[in-house]
Length: 230
Image 1 (tube, rainbow, N blue to C red):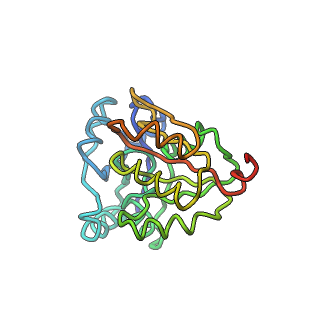
Image 2 (image 1 turned 90 degrees about the vertical axis):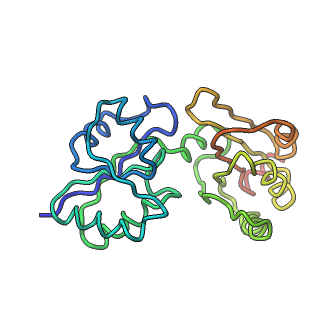
């Protein structure tokens, strides 16, 4: 009888942000597949979890997916965890989840932390309807095209961005989408968490001379909400 693939959400920063159920599942499964074993080892040590750990990331996804599926089909229970947050959201976990589902393997969600929802909840922008775009393309031309497609989006837009590119991305947002309300959510749940709210131009002025560090979630007001505020 095949085992179960548990999709386990882990903390995005603060190690206390994990559910009792997630800790239990990580103790009980036969194997944990981790995007970054270095990060996961810190979490496992915190909760005295000694379950065997294996790597599963974008560089080995092609070779490792079939191996992990085979382990589950032989009856082992597997927990999938990402570097931080909910697996499958802008990480290779989606490949394993999709493959397991296509083969009739039971896939069970162990919900918890998500940078997308955490940022949206404190951004101060409409939360009833939103769209998540992940990371924008790095090449300037492709990034502009992606923003052009989002220009008339009426839902709140959520984007992941690097601290090294956030100012340039905001400048592109200003040029393509206009000077609308945004929130730059940096280092969510961590010691130096910071939420910078304002119109795009204002936020650029606040950030342009700073040395920015940490993971960033950019929340952008949709076109309809922009019009209502004007």
